[in-house]
Image 1: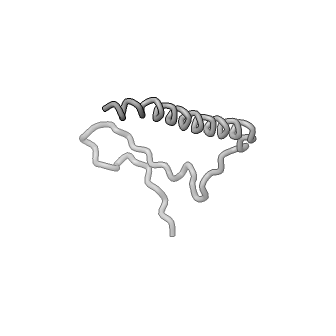
Image 2 (image 1 turned 90 degrees about the vertical axis):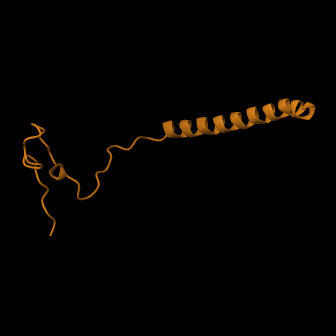
Length: 76
């Protein structure tokens, strides 16, 4: 038990040093990200459009499933 107690301070110091190193790396990454200009506009994926959306009207359990949904256009 005495051996373990003797190592506690050494290990605590090692973990504090490791934590400080990791924190400084993260801070560098944040600083680098702030220095870079932001992208003007995010790029849409090709083939994606508003027409791909499916709208569902939930009027109640009595309606047939999919009866009030806008269907996707099929690709040929």
